[in-house]
Length: 204
Ligand SMILES: CC(C)(COP(=O)(O)OP(=O)(O)OC[C@H]1O[C@@H](n2cnc3c(N)ncnc32)[C@H](O)[C@@H]1OP(=O)(O)O)[C@@H](O)C(=O)NCCC(=O)NCCS
Image 1 (cartoon, rainbow, N blue to C red):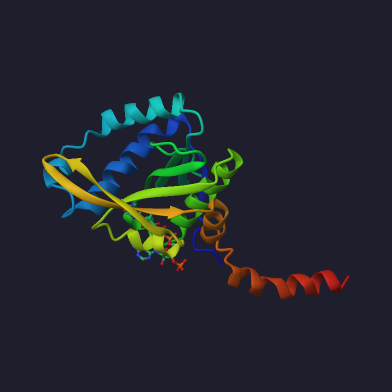
Image 2 (cartoon, rainbow, N blue to C red; image 1 turned 90 degrees about the vertical axis):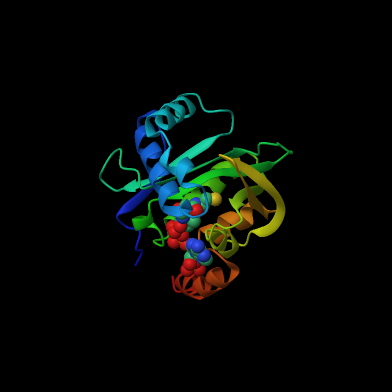
Protein backbone atom coordinates (compact mmCIF):
# COMPACT_ATOMS: atom_id res chain seq x y z
CA UNK A 1 0.00 0.00 0.00
CA UNK A 2 1.28 3.49 -0.84
CA UNK A 3 2.66 5.39 2.12
CA UNK A 4 1.89 8.64 0.31
CA UNK A 5 -1.89 8.14 0.37
CA UNK A 6 -2.55 11.16 2.65
CA UNK A 7 -0.83 13.48 0.18
CA UNK A 8 -1.60 14.60 -3.33
CA UNK A 9 0.47 16.25 -6.03
CA UNK A 10 -1.16 19.05 -8.05
CA UNK A 11 -0.24 22.08 -10.17
CA UNK A 12 0.42 25.15 -8.01
CA UNK A 13 -1.57 28.39 -8.26
CA UNK A 14 -0.85 31.93 -7.02
CA UNK A 15 -2.62 31.11 -3.72
CA UNK A 16 0.20 28.60 -2.99
CA UNK A 17 2.87 31.32 -2.90
CA UNK A 18 2.96 31.64 0.90
CA UNK A 19 2.99 27.85 1.44
CA UNK A 20 5.76 27.38 -1.11
CA UNK A 21 7.85 30.16 0.45
CA UNK A 22 7.42 28.66 3.92
CA UNK A 23 8.40 25.19 2.69
CA UNK A 24 11.33 26.63 0.73
CA UNK A 25 12.79 28.51 3.72
CA UNK A 26 12.20 25.67 6.18
CA UNK A 27 13.64 23.03 3.85
CA UNK A 28 16.71 25.17 3.09
CA UNK A 29 17.37 25.63 6.80
CA UNK A 30 16.81 21.92 7.49
CA UNK A 31 18.88 20.70 4.52
CA UNK A 32 21.70 23.17 4.07
CA UNK A 33 22.85 23.88 7.67
CA UNK A 34 26.58 23.18 7.58
CA UNK A 35 26.68 23.44 3.77
CA UNK A 36 25.54 27.05 3.31
CA UNK A 37 26.59 29.77 5.79
CA UNK A 38 24.25 30.31 8.76
CA UNK A 39 24.12 34.02 7.89
CA UNK A 40 22.59 33.24 4.47
CA UNK A 41 20.10 30.72 5.89
CA UNK A 42 19.04 32.85 8.84
CA UNK A 43 18.72 35.92 6.63
CA UNK A 44 16.17 34.35 4.24
CA UNK A 45 13.16 36.65 3.98
CA UNK A 46 10.07 34.44 3.69
CA UNK A 47 7.75 37.35 2.87
CA UNK A 48 9.92 38.57 0.01
CA UNK A 49 10.31 35.02 -1.30
CA UNK A 50 6.50 34.61 -1.20
CA UNK A 51 6.08 37.78 -3.27
CA UNK A 52 8.52 36.36 -5.84
CA UNK A 53 6.58 33.09 -6.03
CA UNK A 54 3.26 34.94 -6.35
CA UNK A 55 4.70 36.76 -9.36
CA UNK A 56 6.06 33.50 -10.84
CA UNK A 57 2.78 31.68 -10.35
CA UNK A 58 0.65 34.55 -11.62
CA UNK A 59 2.71 35.03 -14.79
CA UNK A 60 4.72 31.86 -15.40
CA UNK A 61 7.33 31.95 -18.16
CA UNK A 62 6.48 29.83 -21.22
CA UNK A 63 6.88 26.15 -20.42
CA UNK A 64 7.42 26.73 -16.70
CA UNK A 65 5.61 24.37 -14.31
CA UNK A 66 5.29 24.45 -10.54
CA UNK A 67 3.82 21.44 -8.72
CA UNK A 68 3.05 21.11 -5.05
CA UNK A 69 2.60 18.17 -2.71
CA UNK A 70 0.05 18.85 -0.02
CA UNK A 71 -2.14 17.03 2.45
CA UNK A 72 -5.16 15.51 0.72
CA UNK A 73 -8.33 17.28 1.78
CA UNK A 74 -6.48 20.40 3.00
CA UNK A 75 -6.67 22.98 0.23
CA UNK A 76 -3.62 25.25 0.38
CA UNK A 77 -1.49 22.73 2.28
CA UNK A 78 2.09 22.60 0.94
CA UNK A 79 4.65 20.10 2.27
CA UNK A 80 6.83 20.11 -0.84
CA UNK A 81 7.13 21.57 -4.31
CA UNK A 82 9.00 21.37 -7.60
CA UNK A 83 9.51 23.90 -10.36
CA UNK A 84 10.81 23.14 -13.84
CA UNK A 85 10.86 24.43 -17.39
CA UNK A 86 13.16 25.05 -20.34
CA UNK A 87 16.78 24.98 -19.11
CA UNK A 88 18.33 28.35 -18.28
CA UNK A 89 20.96 28.02 -20.98
CA UNK A 90 18.28 26.64 -23.21
CA UNK A 91 19.47 24.06 -25.64
CA UNK A 92 16.68 22.67 -27.78
CA UNK A 93 14.55 20.15 -25.90
CA UNK A 94 16.51 20.46 -22.65
CA UNK A 95 14.40 20.92 -19.53
CA UNK A 96 15.66 21.78 -16.06
CA UNK A 97 14.38 21.00 -12.59
CA UNK A 98 14.97 24.36 -10.92
CA UNK A 99 13.78 23.66 -7.38
CA UNK A 100 12.66 20.57 -5.47
CA UNK A 101 12.11 20.80 -1.73
CA UNK A 102 10.16 18.78 0.81
CA UNK A 103 9.82 19.43 4.51
CA UNK A 104 11.96 16.98 6.47
CA UNK A 105 8.96 15.24 8.03
CA UNK A 106 7.60 14.37 4.59
CA UNK A 107 10.87 13.13 3.10
CA UNK A 108 11.32 9.45 2.30
CA UNK A 109 7.62 8.87 1.61
CA UNK A 110 7.87 8.76 -2.17
CA UNK A 111 6.71 12.35 -2.68
CA UNK A 112 9.95 13.37 -4.41
CA UNK A 113 9.36 10.59 -6.92
CA UNK A 114 5.76 11.66 -7.47
CA UNK A 115 6.72 15.30 -8.01
CA UNK A 116 9.42 14.34 -10.52
CA UNK A 117 7.07 11.94 -12.36
CA UNK A 118 4.41 14.67 -12.65
CA UNK A 119 7.01 17.20 -13.79
CA UNK A 120 8.41 14.84 -16.43
CA UNK A 121 4.89 14.21 -17.74
CA UNK A 122 4.25 17.97 -18.11
CA UNK A 123 7.62 18.58 -19.75
CA UNK A 124 7.11 15.72 -22.21
CA UNK A 125 3.73 17.19 -23.13
CA UNK A 126 5.56 20.45 -23.92
CA UNK A 127 7.87 18.60 -26.32
CA UNK A 128 10.93 18.54 -24.07
CA UNK A 129 13.23 15.57 -24.63
CA UNK A 130 16.01 15.70 -22.02
CA UNK A 131 16.45 16.96 -18.47
CA UNK A 132 19.08 18.36 -16.16
CA UNK A 133 19.23 19.32 -12.49
CA UNK A 134 21.96 21.11 -10.55
CA UNK A 135 22.77 20.00 -6.98
CA UNK A 136 25.25 21.31 -4.44
CA UNK A 137 28.20 18.93 -4.35
CA UNK A 138 27.80 18.30 -0.60
CA UNK A 139 24.03 17.78 -0.72
CA UNK A 140 23.10 14.20 0.24
CA UNK A 141 20.05 14.61 -2.05
CA UNK A 142 22.43 13.68 -4.89
CA UNK A 143 21.56 10.10 -3.97
CA UNK A 144 17.93 10.76 -4.92
CA UNK A 145 18.87 11.80 -8.47
CA UNK A 146 21.21 8.82 -8.73
CA UNK A 147 18.34 6.55 -7.64
CA UNK A 148 16.33 8.01 -10.55
CA UNK A 149 19.08 7.11 -13.02
CA UNK A 150 20.61 10.60 -13.41
CA UNK A 151 24.02 10.65 -15.09
CA UNK A 152 26.66 12.76 -13.41
CA UNK A 153 27.51 15.69 -15.69
CA UNK A 154 29.19 19.08 -15.59
CA UNK A 155 30.32 21.07 -12.55
CA UNK A 156 29.95 24.71 -11.66
CA UNK A 157 30.02 26.97 -8.60
CA UNK A 158 27.30 29.04 -6.96
CA UNK A 159 28.04 32.27 -5.12
CA UNK A 160 26.28 32.10 -1.72
CA UNK A 161 27.09 35.11 0.41
CA UNK A 162 30.86 35.29 0.40
CA UNK A 163 31.35 31.59 -0.36
CA UNK A 164 31.69 29.81 -3.69
CA UNK A 165 29.94 26.44 -3.44
CA UNK A 166 30.64 23.64 -5.91
CA UNK A 167 27.67 22.02 -7.64
CA UNK A 168 27.24 19.11 -10.03
CA UNK A 169 24.60 18.36 -12.61
CA UNK A 170 22.65 15.17 -13.20
CA UNK A 171 21.27 14.58 -16.65
CA UNK A 172 18.69 12.38 -18.29
CA UNK A 173 19.27 12.10 -22.06
CA UNK A 174 15.76 10.62 -22.39
CA UNK A 175 13.00 12.31 -20.40
CA UNK A 176 10.74 9.26 -20.87
CA UNK A 177 13.26 7.20 -18.89
CA UNK A 178 13.15 9.74 -16.06
CA UNK A 179 9.35 9.62 -16.02
CA UNK A 180 9.43 5.82 -15.93
CA UNK A 181 12.03 5.69 -13.17
CA UNK A 182 10.24 8.32 -11.08
CA UNK A 183 6.90 6.59 -11.53
CA UNK A 184 8.51 3.29 -10.51
CA UNK A 185 7.94 1.79 -13.94
CA UNK A 186 11.44 0.38 -14.40
CA UNK A 187 11.82 -2.54 -16.79
CA UNK A 188 11.95 -4.83 -13.77
CA UNK A 189 8.76 -3.40 -12.31
CA UNK A 190 6.99 -3.65 -15.66
CA UNK A 191 8.24 -7.20 -16.08
CA UNK A 192 6.85 -8.25 -12.74
CA UNK A 193 3.50 -6.60 -13.52
CA UNK A 194 3.08 -8.23 -16.92
CA UNK A 195 2.17 -11.84 -16.06
CA UNK A 196 -0.94 -10.99 -14.02
CA UNK A 197 -2.06 -8.52 -16.71
CA UNK A 198 -1.66 -11.19 -19.40
CA UNK A 199 -3.44 -13.69 -17.20
CA UNK A 200 -6.32 -11.30 -16.76
CA UNK A 201 -6.49 -10.61 -20.51
CA UNK A 202 -6.27 -14.30 -21.36
CA UNK A 203 -8.81 -15.39 -18.81
CA UNK A 204 -11.75 -13.52 -20.36
C1 LIG B 1 15.70 15.06 -2.28
C2 LIG B 1 14.22 14.91 -2.02
C3 LIG B 1 13.43 15.84 -2.94
C4 LIG B 1 13.82 13.45 -2.32
O1 LIG B 1 12.43 13.28 -2.10
P1 LIG B 1 11.90 12.11 -1.16
O2 LIG B 1 10.42 12.15 -1.17
O3 LIG B 1 12.57 12.23 0.16
O4 LIG B 1 12.43 10.83 -1.91
P2 LIG B 1 11.56 9.54 -2.29
O5 LIG B 1 10.94 9.01 -1.05
O6 LIG B 1 10.66 9.85 -3.43
O7 LIG B 1 12.71 8.54 -2.75
C5 LIG B 1 12.79 7.98 -4.04
C6 LIG B 1 14.00 7.09 -4.11
O8 LIG B 1 15.19 7.85 -3.94
C7 LIG B 1 15.95 7.35 -2.86
N1 LIG B 1 16.51 8.47 -2.14
C8 LIG B 1 15.85 9.55 -1.68
N2 LIG B 1 16.70 10.40 -1.08
C9 LIG B 1 17.92 9.81 -1.15
C10 LIG B 1 19.22 10.17 -0.70
N3 LIG B 1 19.43 11.33 -0.07
N4 LIG B 1 20.24 9.32 -0.95
C11 LIG B 1 20.05 8.16 -1.61
N5 LIG B 1 18.84 7.77 -2.07
C12 LIG B 1 17.80 8.58 -1.84
C13 LIG B 1 14.97 6.60 -2.00
O9 LIG B 1 15.60 5.60 -1.22
C14 LIG B 1 14.01 6.05 -3.01
O10 LIG B 1 14.55 4.88 -3.59
P3 LIG B 1 13.59 3.58 -3.75
O11 LIG B 1 12.29 4.09 -4.30
O12 LIG B 1 14.37 2.73 -4.68
O13 LIG B 1 13.43 3.05 -2.37
C15 LIG B 1 13.85 15.24 -0.54
O14 LIG B 1 14.47 14.32 0.32
C16 LIG B 1 14.23 16.65 -0.11
O15 LIG B 1 13.43 17.57 -0.25
N6 LIG B 1 15.46 16.83 0.43
C17 LIG B 1 15.89 18.11 0.99
C18 LIG B 1 15.93 19.25 -0.01
C19 LIG B 1 16.90 19.00 -1.14
O16 LIG B 1 18.08 18.75 -0.93
N7 LIG B 1 16.38 19.12 -2.38
C20 LIG B 1 17.17 18.93 -3.59
C21 LIG B 1 17.76 20.21 -4.02
S1 LIG B 1 18.66 20.01 -5.55
